[in-house]
Image (cartoon, rainbow, N blue to C red; front, top):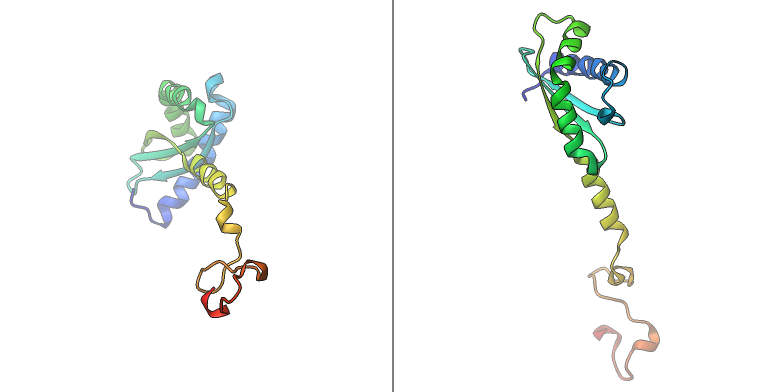
Amino acid sequence: MKQNANSRRLAEAAREKLGYILLFEVSDPALELVTITGCEVSIDKSQLRVYVSCEQRRYPEVSEALARAKGRIRSLLGHALGWRVTPDITFVIDTTTDEAERISRALEDVPPTLSIEKDEFGYPIAAEDDLVEGEDDAFR
């Protein structure tokens, strides 16, 4: 969605209000431990895209619960924001935390070849006892 400074400010206000609504005014147990990671408001304030994060195994459950509560959330948000137009809300599951965790786990599993000391050209540096007799240092 195209953004400008005003729409980013409005999105931040909408994110705060939505957080309050999900925490205190919507009593669906499927929406517990759901985090609003971001919001985008269209320039004309007719569309609001809300990014939510939760545990990966709960994606379908949370999506269904948000779809069920969408009308109530929109009504409460319209009263809380006081905008002339109440935006149509689209909930999107934010998977960036899952991707970051996957990358972090991949970086922890370092192959043993990366721990070998290398020279400035990327060739392994052999220990002195690994050199074959008669081999010149230039041909390592």
